[in-house]
Image 1 (cartoon, rainbow, N blue to C red):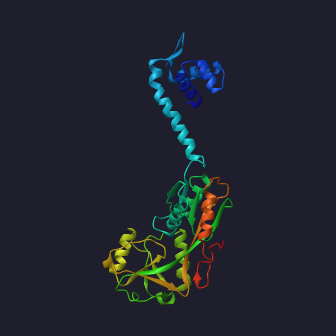
Image 2: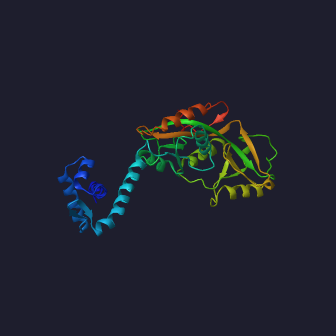
Image 3: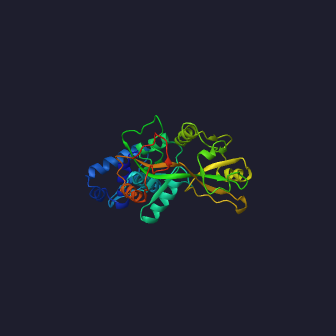
Length: 311
């Protein structure tokens, strides 16, 4: 159904005269008549009855009018959803409890006037496709997974290096340590369920294992962080890696320990990705905000995989 004919019908119904409708739409009266006739042919009913005073709606016209108005409102909503100046900034943070969510909360506190839509996409291919289609405006990722360079139309900037910590229960042999070196972790079981082959975080931990000879187990289903910390608290033989800024709360009786890892400190690199032609006016504001929060990358005593882009 042609929206111009629907719009013409609504204007004519409200004006009560084709001549007034033509003036409001900046077209000729003949054009109004042709549009109404075309709509009546499509619907198979008469919408107007001509009278000495103008044009009155028929019974069918009266029935169609509220639906025609809703069609126009739906079209306006559809247009507004993709007009970057009128819709929220859409940002992918991967997970609700990670460092990227913390960065976006800080941005929201600094710029409460900017509407945000926060989404969580699983893998980098999905995120890049969403950036290129305009479904999202930005995504936080570890750039870039080995063998998968970013497309030329996707830009990125490194915004956070997040140190990993060791999370243990109270019965673990390392639980009383104030810090542990990477070498001290050799031979200990580090349980990280949910690592999916082919993802950027799987590539990160594969390189960590290859570099330092660690034992990382991804066995078993991933029932979420609550089950993970319950299991670590109750199993002295298991520990897990937890990013420094991951927000978790656990019962006091768990007695969990977050222990810094040193010599070197593995850091997980977060970058912001966006399409270089994205015109959303809030995107430069987000990048400028993140630039003020960036700490030094590749600092002495830290480790990241060789494939992580330095920019």
